[in-house]
Length: 281
Image 1 (cartoon, one colour):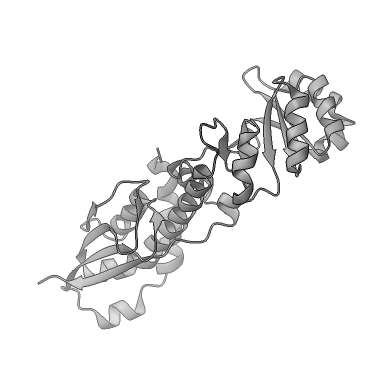
Image 2: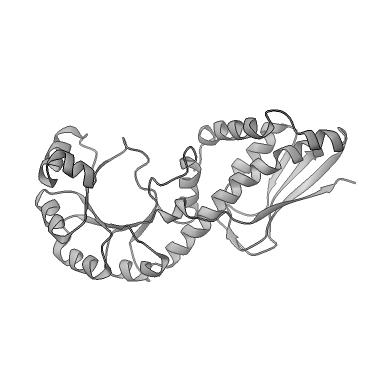
């Protein structure tokens, strides 16, 4: 679920950026009384995401605009599918068009890529595909919603959401054991402790320190296989770094618990969605 409080400020900021000095072209060429309807159309296959944000942009520009969803959030559609319909003053539709499309093209793009990764899991796998914090500044809530719509899961929302001891924390703390010990003393009892490791030797250190989750960073497939055997279920295992779509089936078949993929957000191409406008009779 995407709460309105998480996207309405973004909508307002985006419209202020685009409409701060008005819309010179629309105001010069379109009569005030002209009414129109517009259809959001998929130009390529995609997973639909962002309906409420799309509607919010039009309603922010003009509360009189009516909006209708024609497909479900998360639906996979083919080229030519009509996703949403908006009706109202033509000026309002034109002023909202670019901002509305920018949001849903981004969100649908993330959802589409995520769906591909989820569907690449080995049959019967319980491995989770998750995102990372490599999100567009300011748009994390929208991109993470898109990951969920695509069938994926979210990693920690922010630095305060969980303990995640990475390589530089290990250096600064003086080693894995000391970092885990300090984290356990400081963190709330409700928080798990995750440690990122770069080698099988570090994995053994993290297991000895009783880390709850261990991230295998940039491990090869052979190293992951050995790590699963070495861990023997003592901690949840997460694989991250260098993750491609082609590796998902192999990694998930090894029995790792989580595969975190930065590419879901930092490399997802925008979906191709257009807005086709027509005048009302």
